[in-house]
Length: 511
Image (cartoon, rainbow, N blue to C red):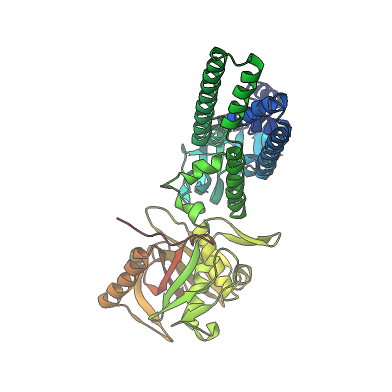
């Protein structure tokens, strides 16, 4: 538990290298330029221009030369722009991390982490390398960068955590088992290295070019032999044969092809779809079925509260993502949030029974912690209920942590000499803990019919792809570990969803 010594670190850096993703040698402008000559039609045109020059077809020579330069220049410009727009995976891993070395906690650059290092990680930290958890306290990790699943994964002692993922709840100590290109993230980086493969269009063009060249050569040979047999002078019949060869070359085809693909590449770039190679446009154009991961690809990977059930009413909440801007609507009309006491109490409950943090960096809002809890903080902030202010008014004095077995979380707060208990979790679990329900300005005992109604609304929300949480509270002057979550007062349901990205169209099912 004292960590590695400096000598061991030096030896392991020599053995394993630095903890960084190795970039393939960057594509230079020279390579991009040379790539334009991989088209066999370009070489056929080049050969046709030389033949045109020697047989005296000077105008034809200059026309073909102009076409050649135009095709090469246009292809180079398009691919150079695309190459410049590509981003590096290196930005995913944070620059520093905390480790124990020689028995002391040190903050070091992430690139200096080596196998065997003892990491100390807390909520908000990005994991710098693949590691095995040796100690964990309420640990949850956002692995959406690897799996596409926005729901945080609970980790225990002996589980693996992976480079590039983020701690969203709790803390841990972990032993590094892989660094750099040997991590899961490194394997992904290796997989997406640009492999030089011919596109279907390149293969078709190559095949067409060979066929045209073969036909032209056979035709020229037949004409030449036939002319010699007929007694036509060799030089004269050679000029005719060469002129026929030039005529057989479709000079307009490469130009039409390049212009068409350039227009397609330009249009896709406007939609933020960057293509490295011009000919790849045709490959994408041939696609008939697209299989895409939903989270973070079709959706924003930002959980957003859209509906709240409280006081026998369903409120709609506007706004998307983590920006704390939005309105509360009932039957399509904006409500005065200050007149909805139970809605305010529910929003306070979800903001206080919460371990995530909302922050603004460089004009962009984001959360540190679990995405679901982040969505709850955001919806409370839309009602001008800021978590920092609430925690000053209702200081936390205790917590019963969420586990996958319990399916709920409870926090205990002080207010005017009394204790306030706030709970959130799976609706059916919360309801089992509730003896009462709050309606308007009164608290009454909850009956089975009321519970069935709430579960029906929960089912309706869930069938519309919402993730639903139940919320409850109670006041007490004294509590014990056994009765903290007993005889709660049900407040309502809160439904959230990972909204689609702007521009994503509704899918039509054909099955």
